Length: 235
Image (cartoon, rainbow, N blue to C red; front, side, top):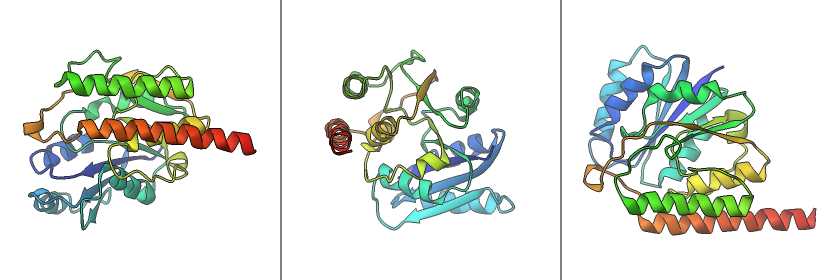
C-alpha cells in the first residue's frame, strides 16, 4: 500500500520542521504533501530549509497557496494531488503523534475509513468549550446520520485515495471535518474509530478553531443531510 500524508499548514513555523521529521520517521510513507495555505510567518522559510535538507527525497512535495484560503481548501488541494492508495491527514502542529499511524492502519481494509478518536483515547482537553463543541457536533451528526461515532472533528482520518477524490470538497474552513464525515456517510462508507493520544495546545500557542467554526459545522451537517434526503426522494 502506498500511504500519502497530507499536511495543511498555516503559520506553523514553530512546529513544521518537528512534525515533518516525525512523519518521515514512520514506515511505509509513499509521499508527504505539505500545503502551505498562505502563511505570513516564517513557515515558508522553514519549508525551504526542509526542502534543502531532504533534497534527495522524492517523497516530499510542497504546494503553496498565495493567500490563506482555510484548512478545507488546503485539504482539497492535497486530495487533488495525491498519488498514493490511502491518505492520512496530519496537522502541522504537535497535537497528534505520527507514531500512531500504525494504530489506524491495523484496522484498515483498503475499503473502509478509519478515524482516530481523541474521546476513545480519554485525553485531556485544553478548553472545555472546544471539547463540548466537538461532543455537540458529533452528537448532532449521530442523530442526523444514525451513527454512533465519538469524534468527527478529529484530524486523523485514514481514507482510501479513490474515495477522497470523489468527495468533491467545497468547505474552506474547519467545517471540512463535518463535510467529509457527512459525505462519507451519504456514500455508505463504513467509518471505524480507534483510540489515539492527543496533546492539546492553547490559543497563545497557535490554536485556531473558534466558536463560529462550530456553527459552520452544524450548518454543514444539516445541509448535507438535507441534500441526501432530497436525493433519495427524487431517485
